Length: 540
Image (cartoon, rainbow, N blue to C red; front, top):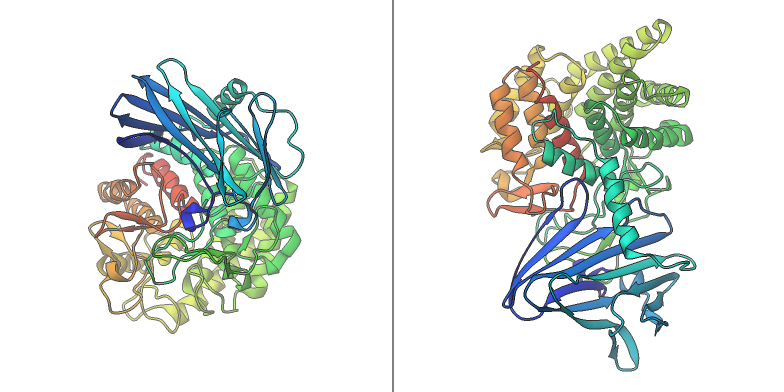
């Protein structure tokens, strides 16, 4: 409906008239954004929130705008266009009481709070609504936008919707007082919760097509549920002691394992369906980027997802949050590894098919973790399979320097290779673990920022932004090696690489100090939360 971010016509803006300076922040303990404008006549604030919890068939956006001091005027512009601009406005009319209604394709909407708005027309066609609101201190104005895929039903009462949203956030977010950064950890929890649908699926990011590198074509649609990211989030939630949000991640992964078994896809829609093919929309795209929806990951096989699933289910089991359905799903994943671990796959980086080292080692980690919680009759066979996988991988993908390399045909190091020891594929004291960590720090880090791997002969920062996920993995790796102060340096450096909103993108351009890629990126928030929790504990 609002695709202006990637060049579409849809938008919904509230802006002071005249000159102003803008700031804003998320309120503590919930995903409620507070805009703050200093104008020539005073200070104006506007609180924005999606009604929480959400409804699969209805979106409600609340905006409460008011003058803090002095009288002010704000311009409001509502321009909803469905289908990324393909579905124009129609049937726009003002109802009794000043509420506006209209349609975009199959979607219906209702807008309350701007009874004196006027239609904006292009020729004979209505393209939106515009209003000017006069604000006085102590008299805020409520704007409520409802969008439904069916009949509108009863209108939303703003005061009730605000109270319910605030109260529900307060109940949904734990205190997390034992983490390194409780306020940031709670904020991260709200982000992970906000990315999670009623099905339990957590989308990889909330946006599409924001470029990782301008004009290089590396921008994608991440509004789907990556099994890998879902499991990362679940591991972080388990580290915090378990919660209903952990149960959601487990529920979604188990359902996909039961449905697809050894054909488990890397990603799904939030309803568990296949990710659509990647296509363009005919829009200009974000500056420096393109207008992509869908994702080519739907054509890939990723072995690592089975190992990540086992790690998630084992963590849930240790907290007493895995039922019989979950235990059967774990057996499905273990059986899939036994069948398919010899096959080349696209790997964690979603690249060309190879026998990626990380994919095999993370499967070994999952099997070892599962064996620790399984009955003796099957635990031994799973542990033995993990031993075989590690031995075979060591025979083909161990660098002459004694460290792991990306694959048998690629001698380079990769940030993904730091994960298997953290998850138990082999010990922290194993010479291969330490050699890999030292090589990685020497070749792929700078100033406590981390790069995934070397793309080519260019300087690292010219090929790609620093990968924030990997910065937090590095903190955990140093912590595992009992270098707690160094772990804190990695943690704090990457923790600071969030925007003024406190949201992490996938990458951070260390030269221009800018976020890169889609935002908020779930797996970065997940590893932040896990590292904030584990580093706060006594050194390992």
